[in-house]
Amino acid sequence: MDSADQSSQFLDSLLFPRIFQTFRMAIQPSKLIIAFGAIAIICLAGALMDLTGTVVGTGGMQGQETELQVYLANPGRLESYVERYKDTGERQGVFGTLWSFARDKFHGALESLFAFDLPGVARNVAEYLNAVVWAMKYHYIYCIFFAVIELAVIAVAGGAICRIAALQFARGEKPGLGEALRFSLKKFTSFFLTPLGPVVLITALCVPVLLLGLLVNIPIVGDLMLVIFMLCALLLGGVIAVVLIGTVLGFNLMFPAIAYDGADTFDAIGRAYSYVSSRPWRLGFYYAIATVYGAICYIFARFVAFLMLWLTHALLGFAVWANSAGNQPDKIMAIWPEPSFMKLHALSTLTATRWESFIAYIVYLFILIVIGLLVSFITSYYFSASTAIYALMRNKVDNTAVDDIYIYREEAKFEPTPAEDVPGEDSSSEKEGNSTQKQ
Image 1 (cartoon, rainbow, N blue to C red):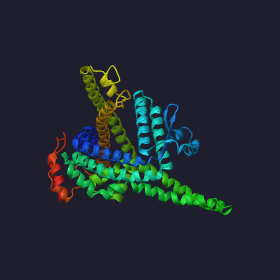
Image 2 (tube, rainbow, N blue to C red):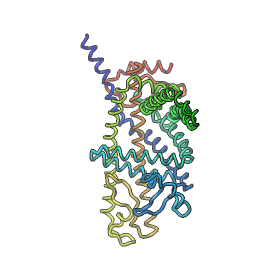
Image 3 (tube, rainbow, N blue to C red):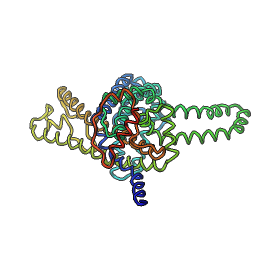
Image 4 (spheres, rainbow, N blue to C red):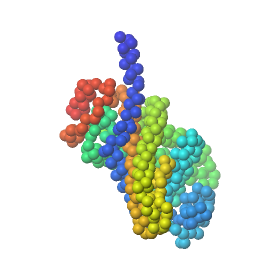
């Protein structure tokens, strides 16, 4: 009897292998459609906002140079650069500038990862974060408007994906696209405000320290105020550090808390902080598994995308023998450069006529759709894995069953399509749990 109990406890402690279900969850068509739509809306919003042309650029020695490159090379030279070329230089948008830079850094990080150069990966990530700091510091109005749009889109799309993942993970069901979107719209306020909660809290904690810093500017009196309130400033600094760590580690659990338990903003934030403080090492273990597994899944998905593009390009090139209008030896190569695993897409520069340029651009857009689906998979995997980790952490910290999930009345009217049964799950106990939730 004791050995049976020990075996049961051992199996319960091995719930983490269920994280490996996230690949199958991430490739569900409804999740990919939602993620692709969200990415398309964000990119369209960024393209429209880029019409303002707030970024100054010039033709540098090695191609196009923007104020971002100047900032990264020498921040002290940025103001003089902008002042010099603001009237005569070329203009572009913040989104387009960051997009191009992020693409280059992503490829650089990927190459470093394949070469097992972890410092190279960290360097590329740090450079991208520095670019984000540039955008927020010198184009803060643009960033505020864009952040509001992006957060609204992510609140709807991310909430819907988390809800689908929660029902899949908890009850083995595949809710429809409309059902998931109805849930995210119903909980839109919570999804929208939850990411802002930690930002507001950290800002509120920083204000007293900043005010003390302003008082230090007053001769003599400011020095005395610093001595008197220094201990309070240090305590606030410690609280800010703890809140910041809790936010970084627990941010991924906030959307799943709303999707799984129907939590409001404060409850979602509280649950995330609670799980971080209660089982930090277990949470880190889950994150490590999900990250490594996600990297493997991404490589596989990228290989599938590359193989599809390469085979299509090779077959077209094999069948076409005509030269391009510019007497290029290969018309397909002139219109569509051969894809590689590291660079799936590129806009051709070998076209000689406007018609070929137009065709090359249309082909480029089709390739971007494939890239968009790949990015959609990454987005779907992130929210699916976060939801699975939340369910496992809730089970360990609160001793709540994985199949215990919030169901609201409107949702109970719809009959979701059952997914494949997960081996080892008791269907009778699952039904009893579901009926309890509906009541």
